[in-house]
Image (tube, rainbow, N blue to C red; front, side, top):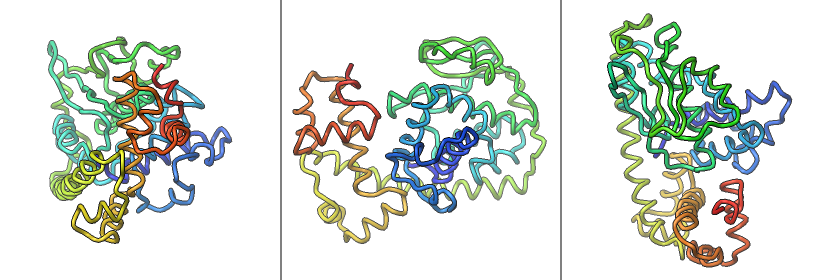
Length: 330
């Protein structure tokens, strides 16, 4: 899914600032992402989800529980105009329903929902489809940040009734209490935290009907822009996915899209990506599928994805995931 560039920019900047206090140079965290430290000082910098996940993978390799800490620091102000629309909502329930309406602006990698269970509200995150090696990290970051957002909106702590996670308990699970001061359950059907139903009707201290209406309208227009871009991007991905064995190149793809290579390149740049980034993303997705669901030898997978040499595929897969194809399959 196409995400607001602001959320990916903030996430990468947050990773770097978190480790800066420990004296770790930004180059180590940005390695393999194609992002330069200077890029992060410009508000119009476009960072793709793939680049963001490369930086996060570098961070996890240094400290596995970093998702919990980053989540605690991902405040509602990180979400631009959506954040202001949430802050000025009348109640917590109004704010959360607005956030669920615009997942692209929220920048989530999950399908978020609110569900009622035994008189309690559960804020659920399911449907994760990104790098499985980062599933625990992204779950921790997502739920921790959502809880922080709720507390930012309320202006006070939100008492939790429970928190559950689809992954097994990590060896640092005692640290979950810093984010979720409640009973924890692991290997659950989904990822979620629960709180008492009456909190949804709690008035927000910064509620402002006039400002909220203006911000909500701007969110609606931005989401329409994202939806249009997403449809166009989906068409490109569909064409490329059908030709991974013999990728058409930028000029060939432009011809298939009935536009000039220059126009295609400009549109891709506006969405924070490039032809090579899209090709890499699609190859990575297909590679994971073939490694997980077939017993094909590595050389056959490499050939199917359009690599002339198996070694080139292995090198690319390590760059995408941080592990070799054989390690991923194991």
